[in-house]
Length: 438
Length: 159
Image (tube, each protein chain N blue to C red):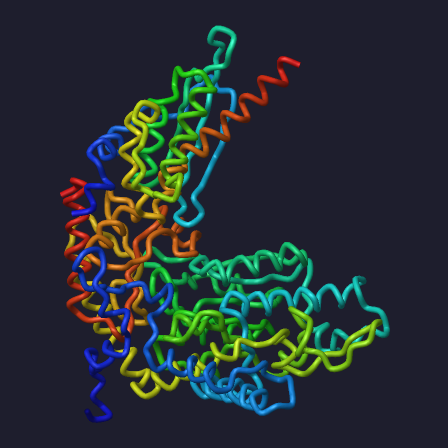
């Protein structure tokens, strides 16, 4: 294989994922098209976690014993590995519980800065808020800008932040093909805009909004830019510096890694200015009964014993993906997505909720089937061992905007094959026959 | 194929031709229930009447959006409870909830009591698919809630 050959050896990859060889619902081979919800895990990731538990298990950043040192070392090496995966500096990587906690960390930190900056808790002795934190404070008259296609994790925390602080939530609409509608960007991004939160890739429509363009407009008015990369980092090469983001976050479990660990990247000066979100052990500098000072980031945001084994697994996932090459992963998914678009648009009564080209589009293919509810479509597909997501996929507003109550979603990854996409199309036709609509 | 065990012909019939559909006047209570994982929703009204000194279900009307299971389930419910004394309707409701939760740890395998449940016994196959139990229960939970509210109103009026 030459460096310009972007083909994947899918059969070799599939051999690393024991779950993919399962027979389900009778003698059907599992066809897993739900990686947008969570990916399957290769044995390399599982082995890394197990190896850590077997040899080096201890509470990281505590203790003076050998295992404690090894655990701390494993944890910090994982941080460096994840940083390298997205072109970041390790000191700018905060481990969270998942992507949702990452967006909440930003929102609550801003909220805490806003309270402390006001009449709330600003005693002269309070050391909880750095001078830079007051610059993060938002309140009435300020605006937070999001989009209508966001996952609830990049929507509800900002809505709640606005409710707590009195700021106003505004949003870009979506076009009928499920992209962010930027036609009113000059109105929506204005001198009142303090923060813009946008998805790097929609988990419903697959659309990849022009984040760099949005970031440029946001920065021109001094607003911060938060990028939800939960659906992009697992599927494309991502370099944080090129995104234009000030913060970017994602989850390990959608990129072949374990559940229970997420990643927040933030520009160092911002992280340094931010007050804590969750407080307790591991994140403190000095604790007295009257007051506490906090460690610098990233430790300031990592209270409690960290999920070391999971971060070790995540690092192994980064190794796995980099060994294949993220450009190859992206090209493989582009090919599968094109096939899915072609196959589904051929079926009468099926409407794809998202762009019908692979331009600026990832491998989430959501669709509506006339007169067959997504639950019923999913049930018929499951009968043939095809795993898809049904419902609103934690993105209710975009469904409403596209005129459907819910949808069925196939989401593709490096281990999927063209045959599996064809089986999906066959399964949809079977569902239509079963419910008597064709 | 297992599908037929879930999608019994009676269920598909109710789905295609739902009974007692639409919101009607008068009513004593109205509720709106949703299944937050899929967005399915039902608005349901209950009207009570006096039947020889005890409250009975005069009418159940509803407007629902959802899958075949949730739609058929609420349709079957209306057939079973309209005209019955509230106490008896509540027993039917309890039996249906037990059927869905597989009372005794026998989800989907328990012999449902068709004397109490009538057509609703066909939902026994649904209990084998945990993800769909909420679909089947949506309308039944809404009815129970609405009826409890209507009964509470009744008690207030009697005081």
